[in-house]
Length: 391
Image 1: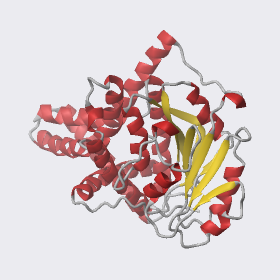
Image 2: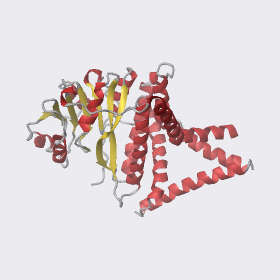
Image 3: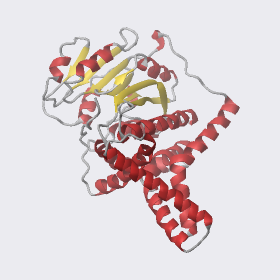
Image 4: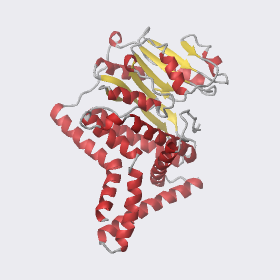
């Protein structure tokens, strides 16, 4: 029982903290031996041709802001084409976009889903690289320049931009937790990229070589993750570029964030099944290590290890196994009590951000369990559902 407890505790610790510590140590050693490679900006003539693809479904309230943001992006004249795909939109999104001759509007009636829209858009793309971003996120002016400079390296097949969650002082647990989570994720992605490759890209901002793009099955839940990981599976690296970032507001509340996390968790299980070859550490030694440590454990067994660690700790402490077990149990109970207190305060709209982080952490792990159940029950649709966000 004690062995099971320590193993469960170690796995939970490794998944969320230990991997980061190990990665930090490895990177420090690598820098000491090989130095640190710094990306170099390229002159305009050396940059590849680029297509910016944006799927927009009923986004009339924000589309003009997105268009203005897009047209302000820096990239060499004649090397950038912009595509907005508005399939199925029933509001004025397509009509507004049609007012801008600089933009290629792709629209057809009937909603087939984001994946179908992206695949259809790629049929029109003849540029060397494609960059994808969401209609409700804003990019920094230099984003495309910072992304496309990496394609000078032939081993690079995809680029993951940084997601930044806009957090206000008055925001609740969804914002504070999501903001903290993405800051930590960004740090891990920087180190992953420096070691070898990022394990997947987020749809807010990512890019691929056009000739490496593979259409994913239409029932794919995490299309952005799968598109990028197919490229990694083919032997190319995914680079993380924090100087290219997409900014968006946090989820409107914890309920909306939970809905999004459950969908991601269900998609994570689907992705692990479909990317089974990447679990072969003999074929992909470094990538498999990163993939299992950063993604697979979070999306599969770690929430169960957390539950096991608590239950086993209670049983062992009742049996009087020693002070160390009592202290560990006290620490676990206090953490979950803080999470519970965070939930109560969030419901009463009392802002104590120190309590929002453990609450968000518990919500995130609950979402994994719910997502696993939903996926295997066949109740998770691949159709993207917009989560309400703060304004």
